Length: 128
Image (cartoon, rainbow, N blue to C red; front, side, top):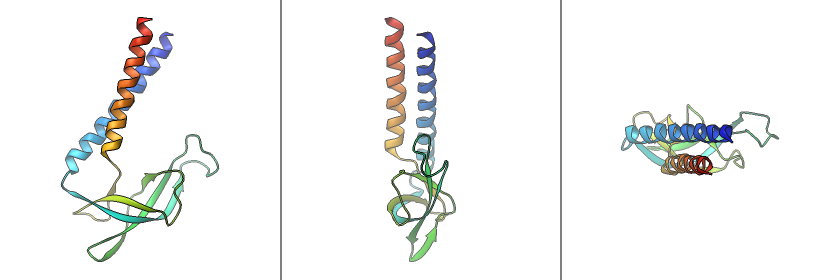
C-alpha cells in the first residue's frame, strides 16, 4: 500500500505544479490577452489518430483581429472530437496576435482539485 500512497503524492505534485504554472501564466498575461472566436484549420495528433489512450490533438487556429485574418503560429491542445472547421474560442496576445494561449480558470481549478483529492486519498490510506 505504501507504493500507492507515493504514486498519489506524485500525482498531487504534478497536478499542483500544472495548476501553479497555469496560474502564473494567467496572472502574467492577465489584461494583455483578448478572447475571440476562431476555426480549427490544421490538426496534428501526438499518436496515431485511431489511438484514444494517451493521445492529444494540437490545432492551428484561424481567427480575425482588427479586420485581419490570422493563423496562429503555435498550436493549442483541443478535444479529441475536434475536426478541421470546428469553431473554438481562443485567447490571443494583444501585442503578438499570432500567438495564442490555452490557459484557463477551469484548468487551474481542476489541477488544484485533482491535487487536493490525491492528497486526501493518500492521507486516508495512511490512516487505515
